[in-house]
Amino acid sequence: MKSSPRNNTILVTVIVLLTITVVLLVSLINKDTPTATMNERAENAVQTVADTTERPPASPAGLAAADKNGDGVVFQSGMHPWIVEDEPGTCPICGMDLMPVRVDGMEEGTVRIDPVTMQNIGVRTAPVTIAPLRRTVRTTGRFEVNEQATTIVSPKIGGWIETLYVNYEGARVRKGDRLFEVYSPDLVSTQEEYLLALRNAQRLAGTTGAADAQRLMEAARRRLSFWDITDTQIEALVQTGTPQKTLTFFAPATGTLTRTAVTVGQRVMAGQDVMQLTNLSQLWLMVDVFEQDLHWVKLGTEATIQLPYATGSTMTGRVEYIYDALDPALRAVKARIVVPNASNVLKPGMYATVELSGHETGLHPVVPSEAVITTGKRSVVILALGDGRFQPVEIDMGIEADGQTQILRGLVGDEQVVTSAQFLIDSEARLASAVSAMMGGHNHGATPAATTDEVPTPTIDHAAMIQDTSPTALSSTASDAAVQVVKVDIMGAAFTPDHIDLQAGIPAQLIFTRHTDQTCATDVMIPALGIEKTPLPLHESVTIAFTPTELGSFTFACGMDMVKGTLLVTSSR
Image (cartoon, rainbow, N blue to C red):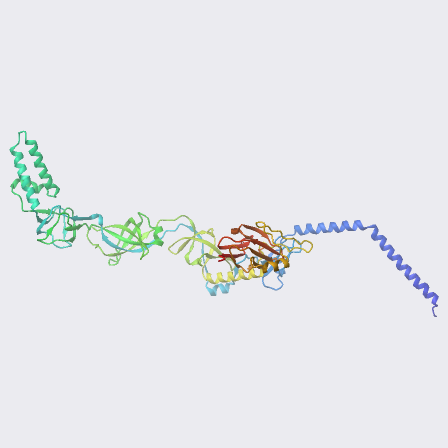
């Protein structure tokens, strides 16, 4: 049955009417409930923010789940730690750069070594102890004559040696032994004067001139006494009544004749050194204390002395004196120890081995010296954290004694340190830190990039010298020979160029342009020239104009004083 054209027209009309009706009904429904819908959306948004602020940071297991590429490093938001990505980026909530984090939870610079590798490279550890240090300083010494036990024989009158009773070096004498006889005309005449004064005093006894005669006699006797003539010799002169041609000189002290400078018949002058007597019952042991050991040696330090030719024989003593001068050739200071030598077994010039027991220090953390890695300006030990984890720690060293090193900063005393293979572990930790730094970038002090809706215009005033940074102004300034123009770009962690040469007395313009947000240099300063922190907006040129007057080298740096450059001002002549 065919449908007529009229029926078709009616059907189309009905469909159109139904469609219009449905559209009107939907519009009416939306118009009646817009406020409710917006309120629900706002409530949902608030609930979402509340959920995110209360969300705990991602656990190490959660960090590992985000490590899609398996490199052990993910990137996490510092303000919103539940935001974790496998690649560098920004936080969708605050816009800050994501920071690299290890998925194993270890701090930066910490490395993990499996047990097989630890055994292969020979890792050994030792505990950090809290203890004082006491060092034994081992050195050598040489026996020398005790200078305080040396006596010089020097007659106070001139004359000639008639007889020499001790005529060779090394002879041992006691106090009062005869040494030599001297003929002296002055001595003979003084004896005659004394005898004459003595007889005169005896003749005038009981008269008014007795007192003067007595004074003359005492003066002559005193002169003989001042010439070291003994009372016994003077009494013998009185008894005999005859002057002696020669007089005998006696040893003033007990000792060994260590030097003689006369022979029989030789003339001697008053005050001339004729002999030297040394008491060798005590010797000085002079030991060399090197400058690095001086801290341990004080007055009274105990010393143990060993004689190389008498195995097993030891003596003890104490440091009596430390000399002030340093021997520039040996880099050592002399210390003196007094050693008894009653039996004369020890001889001046002999050598001995000496151990000096240093004083104890205060309590500090102490590690084996082999655990310390010294790299010039810094010292490091490797901490064993357990489970195959190791971490380098920078320390300040104190003194070292007998294979132990005192730690002043960096350790507390309850750790384990690596004593072997630590160089390999330190290299691995440095490599891990370098890789982490490269992946994280240099973003200290980075600020979000300016939006297109807010483009700040730099207004810098240094000594009322504000310069236009438009292309027209730059081209005209660059063509002016009286102005020095230098363009400086900031691409990352450095100024380009980082060395600028200027001439004194000629106006200068430094044009800084920051091209990246991954940098500390969000502002610039030149403190030595009085130029304070100047903001550097992203992708905008900022001109600092000034006239250098002082010659020398100056530093321009970012506001955090991390990125630096050098400004060299030389004479314009």
